[in-house]
Image (tube, rainbow over all chains, first blue to last red; front, side, top):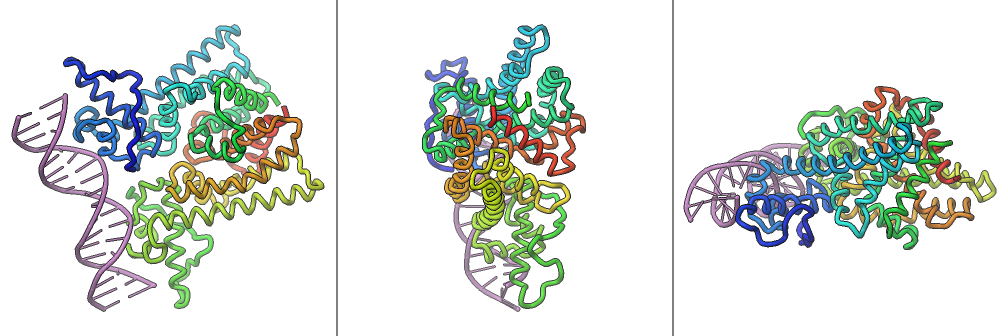
Length: 227
Length: 227
DNA sequence: GTCTATAGATGGATAGAC
DNA sequence: GTCTATCCATCTATAGAC
């Protein structure tokens, strides 16, 4: 972990020189963005506090001053990003329910689950890093993050219930297992896996458009639920 | 990383006290098994050489003496386990081809891809740790392992070609993307994800039988390929 | 081959000047 | 709030006695 990576933009921070009343927030945001980027690309354990502060262009003590510890910084990024993602998914599911008299079809439920993270991956956007961060935290996160993922079940609860209602003739365990398979499809959308697929297909699988990939994924998942 | 974990059995090592001519191999195997287990459960970066040698009951210098370095140990485990898995998959694919005049149907191809790793996960067997190790190395491995995963494409090549031949009416990129989705389903079979699904389904999704899970996965994947 | 002791490097965190 | 200097723990790897 030593090569310098460019820090492009911070979604909710300022790039201009810090005005007096916002110096604190600006520094904190710089640390937040640098950490998210480095963690997403290199993994949690491989990135040191020194790497983060160097990338952010701030002093070494900033992480502990603004976040308390490296682990607390990790957890704050994780909490903010998963909250954003889950909120978007919940809203889409809610809208689908409204549009179908409270009983959305399988396809609409799957879209609410799949579309938000895949849209984050769109190469034209600036959320790719955030999604890579979330996916990495599933396997590399610390104790606090694993514990939070346990409670995250309450978020999946809504999707499981909607799917159970949409396919009442299926045994419930079939629905749960298929939901598990769909989540696997989603979590596999990592840089390294896309690169590998790109190599295997000799360039045929360019991810040029999020909506096309969403359609592919929903088609595949829906077929598995409708058989 | 400090709690002591019991080391049950070593698949290819001896548990009896080491006979003179086999002392070296026995120690090496103890280190190999301890490292695989600790890495699979806790992740690569979190496990130190001290943890490994303590778990194996050997001295600290053993890792460097027998394997050269911690990274080389990691890579040797990775290489052996992936070779075993790929060999089993290739044999199943070959047998399926023989049974169908050189042109196996989609379902047989998917079974050759899915069944071997899922059988390793069977709770009654002793290969669960090895599969967790392989899955973890996909996202947490070192540089050498990532590079090896690039060449592993040659192994997937056979499966991609078989699927392309089995569904000639599909656009090739559709086949590649769907193969990517199936790989995602497989890579999601980690301890933590099973636990989470178990919580979500309130105990409905017990993984009591590898063959049942294989059937569920192949059913789901086949539906996605046949639509 | 095995072990102890330790070198040499790097990590997270903090004290204290400004 | 920011920064430098530093403490102290822990890591990998190895030297050298047995």
